[in-house]
Length: 184
Image 1 (cartoon, one colour):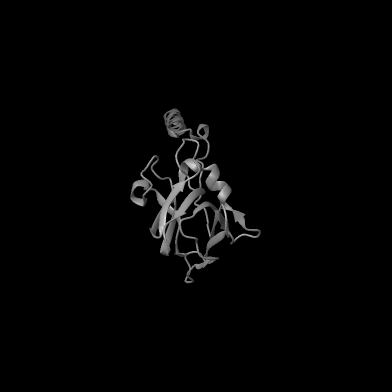
Image 2 (tube, one colour):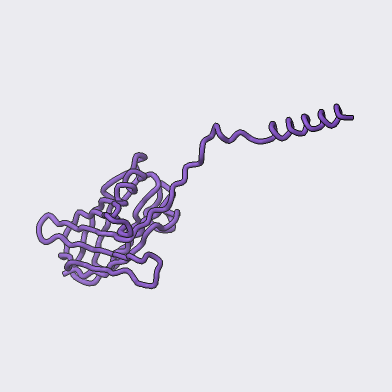
């Protein structure tokens, strides 16, 4: 009887040991946490004239305070601007530059630009490793004088290639802001 109990115990232990999967070979799954972005700075530089800076700063994130939006001046009519975007996480000290992370993970990110009014075009001026647009650098061309808006949305894991629209890009929004502009 002791032999049967012993053999039953050994058999049960063998089944338990062999039934456990060996996940150690795969290693831990890499976790790519969503970026914390508190500040977007957009620099618009014309060939001639004043550089314009657009900024959205939201230090409390999803908290009760609205983002503080600043525009350093008006855009010139019928002018081409080289645009550059900088992203920061200012909940850390010193502030973490998220721009580098978006650039390194270009395949997983894309800015989508939606303009209205006196902005004629916004064209991408940079690409990821797959040759698809990212949008950290872009060319903005104004039309005639008037009011305008520029909405900039950073999408995470967009479909690439896409048609440059929010619905075509898909993915999840990491950051979005609309800037009111005047073209004179």
